[in-house]
Image 1: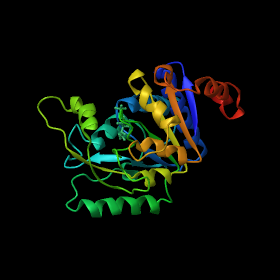
Image 2: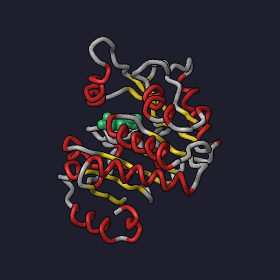
Image 3: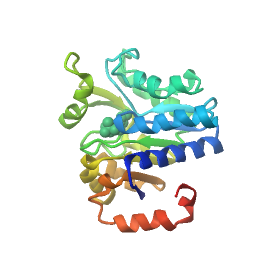
Length: 261
Ligand code: F6R
């Protein structure tokens, strides 16, 4: 794992967008794993801008999202399909047939989870998986006690996640209590992982995820097992990292990051 610390949330999102852009330009058939949430909006805004201003081409790539709420239709403004359409898919030249999310309305949810895993395999796996992190440490919706080898399945959302995301649903609508999510094992099979976390309220969980012991209580700690995982944070989210100076030195000096400095 490597941790990259950027001065601001905008600079952190910029770096993540740059990594995705480079991968996509180098591999137009990229199979890209995507995440939703507030943090990712800044990344998608930058990718849309690159598409419009610098011809970043999405026409050949395929995407797989991490998760979707159970019971929400794609037209529901709270569904992750709706989020992706709004923030990315409808604003770039991606073929909508190449965009995949679990179907939260499938009559047989277990069969839907198996289908999703099969689809990822048919695309020869995920090349690059983008991740956010919940305040209690979930990646996707892999809530506390998610098995570190888990596959795509239905998860009951934890009280922490319900509290984190309920404000997005407003007072009129109630938030689903379950979601389909890629498993920790599914995520770990992606060839490259890229996690973005910004803001002081992520500082404690970032320190535990990056430097703490691996535990099923915090699914993000499993990222330490991956051979190619980059965690990008802004200064406020880096505040509790013990090794921050070392991580800053790596970014400032290692040739791999030269193009991003
Ligand atoms: C969403 C997802 C979640 C979010 C996480 C952070 O697809 O997989 O793990 O990435 O809950 O959400 P924000 O960015 O809203 O803090």
